[in-house]
Length: 295
Length: 236
Ligand SMILES: Nc1ncnc2c1ncn2[C@@H]1O[C@H](COP(=O)(O)OP(=O)(O)OP(=O)(O)O)[C@@H](O)[C@H]1O
Ligand SMILES: [Mg+2]
Image (tube, rainbow over all chains, first blue to last red; front, side):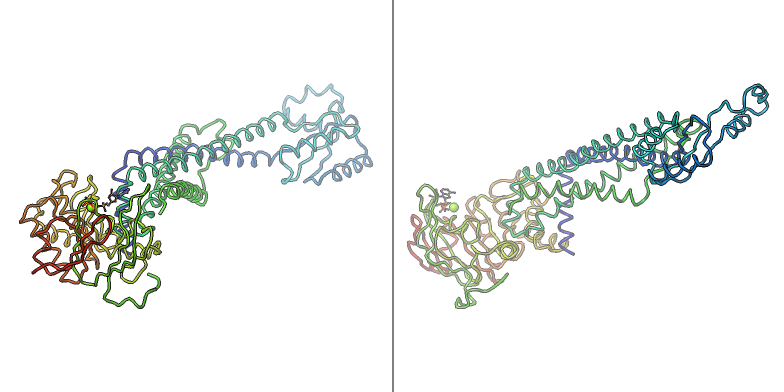
């Protein structure tokens, strides 16, 4: 008990003596947490949006001819052999015409003179949920295109492609900002603690001479690292939350943000970010202690 | 502290040195062939010309430096094989007033004295009380909150001594405690040391100042060129 009081007294002294460099480190850590968490937040929200959008994702295969029942069975088997799918639905030329007419509603009289088979027959395929990665959809569509008698495959290729490219870009940004976070947290903390240690050689030497234990000498520096990680991540996350509120207020209404719900991190993710930041900063301070506080 | 590896040393021996030597590169023999026993509770004086090896001997006793050869035991422990926590705990029981003071110039007098008590986790109140008491005894009460870097040499010397005795150590090593002091302040310093000695502390004092040992009947060891020249008693 008394050990901790003594150690905290020493930690407070350290912080007071080097507060300006401490403050810089704290700012850097919270800024890196902010940047990393910002992109992660966008990423998780995009993932959710992607999930919701792909709920209505289906592939439409336009056929050259109206398939007979035997042909339908064959195609169904072929598709199921390639991969299990959620559902396969055949749409005859007649049904397609009917749907189109329904869509036109009152204007449907313009179809009056058209032959009832001017629209192609098609198959609507809803892929399994688990199959909805971009690559799987692409493979399935390539396979369908290779079947005899198919004319064209449609599944909003362009949109899906863009979405997945965006997600890939976002992944890279997250990896980069994560690396930035790791580097700043460990190196900045290691650096400030190194400065403190080197600037106080006389005191540390004296502490050894008057019989301070290794733990007593080292613990304040470790606590310093833990505090940096804790404070930095909390302030970074609070700043992000402010940003999040601001975006929510200013960008609601019709627009992209309405496509998906914009959610903040769950408590467990928040805890995870804080713990990660604390461990990174502790690693930073520990490495400096190991290197410059040899006892 | 781990084991008491020398049971044949009587309990009342504080310091045991056998054939101790200390060389510095290239070939300076600061100390050679020192064999010496200091009893628990003794007040022991170390004298000799400048460069005779007094400071070196004190540094060896508190394990600030290692002997080149020979055996040193303090309170029954071979101080040169102690490590980590054991060494720290033993050092908490040894108070040293260094010849160069080793004060932290950017800390106040009170903070400097408190350090030796903080490392053994004494309560804040006890520390404050003890610091005030010591400053009173050394006529430094008004310097409580002054940075030690701003003190005169003689004041710094007394702060260093206060730090050495603050934690009530069993063994007190003092290097030139009165070098910068006038006669009456010297007397106060010696009073403080005598009081600690009466309370049971073993005290070793390295000094040039004949006035502080001649009147007592304590043992006085004279070093000459790193060797023991004589061990006598003061004529009280
Ligand atoms: N770190 C060192 N490196 C080299 N030589 C040293 C070192 N420390 C002490 N010496 C030498 O050892 C000898 C003894 O030094 P020491 O400091 O013990 O003398 P002293 O008796 O305390 O002298 P003084 O009365 O001036 O304090 C001296 O010749 C000194 O030059
Ligand atoms: Mg000396």
